[in-house]
Image (tube, rainbow, N blue to C red; front, side):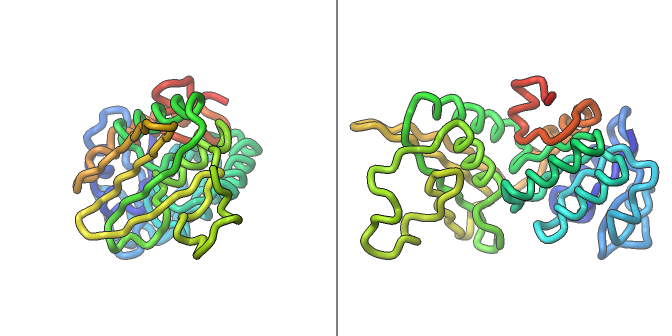
Length: 259
């Protein structure tokens, strides 16, 4: 398969370039990076935009920014390329549009707020727990410089938990006394709280509560992009067999990944 990596000079993109070059079943066809456009990375030509980089490409891997990832995905889908989205910040409505376009074109998209294998397992565990415990909230920790809130990992978790059912709130947010912002924002019916401080990379925590007991499921990421590489390449290899959107690496790991 010929792969295009958008965001090839970024934190995760650089690690993915090396991994694709080392894989016997993958070929680095093109890269996208505005800062390196016109040159080469790993022997592959670098372009300023995804639209320029799609000739002969089977799978676009996007690790860019929330401002352009949706347009990149729709452009690749329009060219008949499959897409793996590792960029965070897309909303549930964005994914509806991407799914609709992919279904119409007959291509696959795999999107995950976090391509770490351990993060996928944490999400799968939380989805299982939500079937049995009625109340939960999500806490999203990230570095002080991370501009998007909540993180893609936390947003995906909250939205997918909401697909199981809406959590119970003893006091609805509308009935609170005081600033409602103190209770976070509501995503998928759950309250999500974003903390931005130095020393965090990305940590996501979901707390389930019953009278006199709590269950916490938490994933902590380190300072290296390596945990995301294996999961991204797993998605790259699976996505050509998919039609439409599959959301969450756990779906590929624990399910068929098919519509």
